[in-house]
Image 1 (cartoon, rainbow, N blue to C red):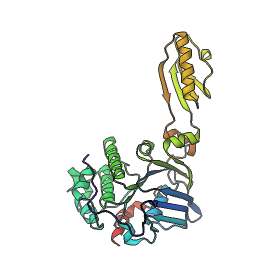
Image 2 (cartoon, helix red, strand yellow):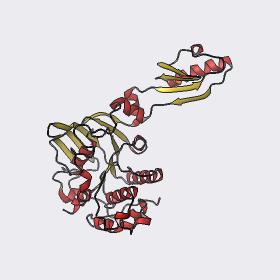
Image 3 (cartoon, rainbow, N blue to C red):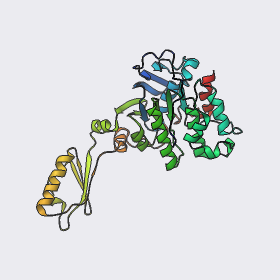
Image 4 (cartoon, one colour):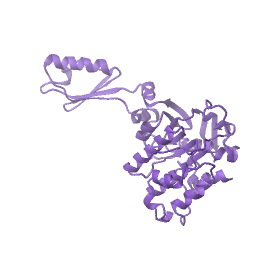
Length: 351
């Protein structure tokens, strides 16, 4: 992937003030649909240059939260500032400095990606070169094809291209790599990392836990409209008390009862033993000393620390089954189609 460069003109956001000010500040955010509270008192701070991932089951309130921060959806309570502005009243001075990638955007099928990018670049004071954006998002072969001929993955790349063409200071990515093949996902990750290296602030929602673990400086888990945990993946693991697993194959002729007392819990499946422990270093040392003392080799010995997926499932259970929660359809409004207004949402920079 070619190197990403910042256009010569530096961004200045009216009202942003000192560079130490947080890029996003949310206090007590609430959003209600009829009798259903979709977002219930969220507090969130995102520092400048930080990449934060919002995780949670469908309908947990992630997309609604992001849409309020974008200025696309009005809030029913709380205070919100993005780049020093209230998104609901920020106007063009605010919108020129944000980029939006929705879950599903609507395009005019008769345009080409190059034409759409040129159009959207015109909404911003210091856009990226269209050719650079086409290359960064892997659209070279389809740059001059009609949008109607693009595959789902290629349309998603166009979503991403339109979200970054304005060289925004804050980028909202709602499920940015849905529909991507593994190669395209990795390329998109590289792009996000390049944008972060240039100082962009990125708030993303994703169902891919490996994506959050790879990209995010901090992970925020939302369930039933509330933040249930936040921190780095390592911090979340420690706070959740998730145990490390020591796994190995029993030496021939031995039973599990012959092992020393280890860890919190022991499971045996055939000749394979798994030990859950909160003190992996001490338990591995004791196990190794026991095996060496007997002259035995512990085959298939592994130490597996809890993944973000383990912690996530610990926090929200098996709720991430695709069923809407809190009255949401999973795209931010009850039974609606927020993505159908995708082009209009990005194009509000011109209003």
